[in-house]
Image 1 (cartoon, rainbow, N blue to C red):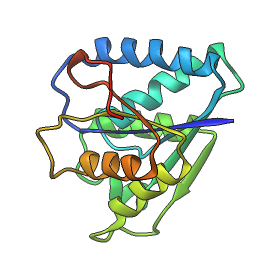
Image 2 (image 1 turned 90 degrees about the vertical axis):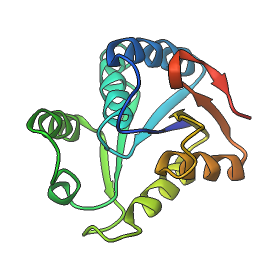
Image 3 (image 1 turned 30 degrees about the horizontal axis):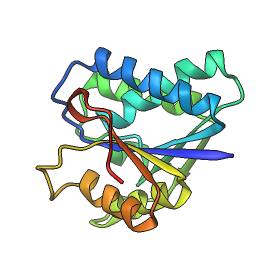
Amino acid sequence: MRSISFTGHRKLSEDSTALSQRIYSRLEEEIQNGATDFNTGGAVGFDCISAAVVLKLRKVYPHIKLNLILPCSNDEQTENWAKEEKAEFYRILSLANTVEYTSEHFYKGCMKVRNARLIDLADCCFCYWNTNKQRSGTGQTVRMAIKKKINIVNLFNEQLSDIN
């Protein structure tokens, strides 16, 4: 069993449709090579786009699983989100195979705990990381993946570049 976790920026510098197509193509290859579990933190942006792609792939590969690893309650996580973003989050939530909360309530370090859990579960990390943004949750999560010595695939700016 191979597990892939996703981490990425909330604001994307490219069209989400093109990014979704790249994720789909890469994940289909990973599924054919034995990947079965896909973990996301449920944030706006890359996390939700990746989750939506996994759900689309699950229609073709019903054995794969989408696992949500969430940092706090749904209401607290989505508190300042736009109506459309909340609707997509709740759609994904309703279709996920599993949902795990790393904390009952939001606190200053809950995102870091969620990120660590994502990497703990992963054999591979797919990220959307602008390497110029060193101080970000995405950068923090990628550094955790580097420390664990797992493969990292960066999908930022139409690049399919492996970090390790």
